[in-house]
Length: 67
Image (cartoon, rainbow, N blue to C red; front, side, top):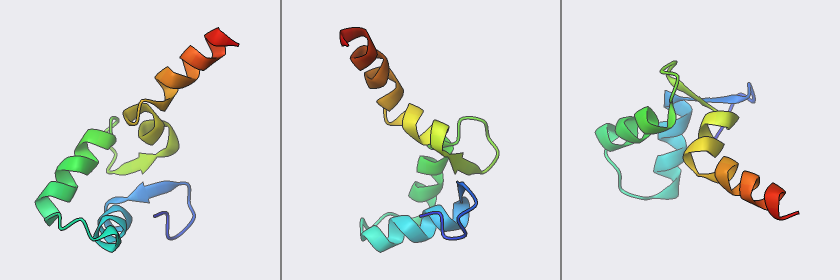
């Protein structure tokens, strides 16, 4: 989704990416999802925010403990 390869996903990039997935989400629904992902409120999604939202950081911690 990071069309300009700057390391973050802007609102426009996010909207375009979600639309390409064909999920039938409205612009308002996409904006609401972005607001959930954008934990620092800068209008962009960075890797850390995305991974945190997806629960990967918690899983990573659990895997490190098992190893």
